[in-house]
Length: 284
Image 1 (spheres, helix red, strand yellow):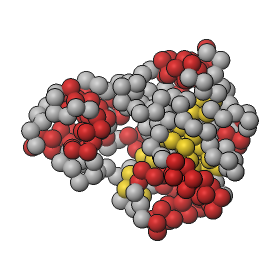
Image 2 (image 1 turned 120 degrees about the vertical axis):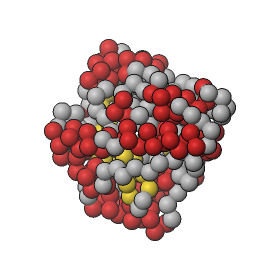
Image 3 (image 1 turned 30 degrees about the horizontal axis):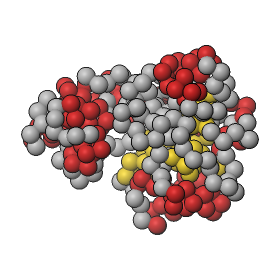
Image 4 (image 1 turned 90 degrees about the vertical axis):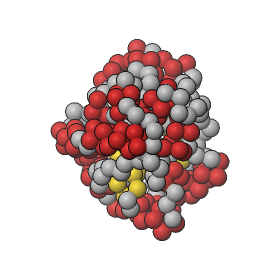
């Protein structure tokens, strides 16, 4: 599978904060030319069996996936896991603990949003939630658009839900070391998701990559929906500097919200080794 170019190894379903089911995502990926797919719901592997079955039905090679929320340097960082055993007890228990604080955080977000003139936001967000354990800012954003306070979800994040805005409530997630360990001990490969999004200083970013490698992390998303051409080049260089493999994923959530559809990313830059070269034995 090392010859393939159109791998999409980062997307979300209704099991976390996407709007499509795993059964809807697999044929969409296949139709869009995806050659290897992974569903990477936030802090949850409950959709893996469904995704693998849906991929088999349309003849699409599949890797198990998850996106784990991590606190690093007081910032939420996401670590994607690929090709692991989704029934691994340490992984499943670790993800359960990571999900644990989401409802309390969401209720507090509802309180904060009511203070700035958006009452009923928690209850409104719950209407969009497929899995109550995984209520997230995206669900609040959909309700705030529906209630007429913002024209689209991007505007909601800018005005209300980004760090420093009135509806933002921080949460303490897993540690970087724990997330990487859960993935690797379950037989998978850990990947830093969309690194350009974190807006770290050069020193903070170096510390993230250094510590990630020290814990056994092996990959980084070079080409992803949140990255620019300049980011592709930068993180391709990081692959060389930190001896990492390159991953690729749209981070698709919804046909109405995501600016990059499944399978519609440019190819990985030349000179990098794709992460799936390590995972051929785990492809279903």
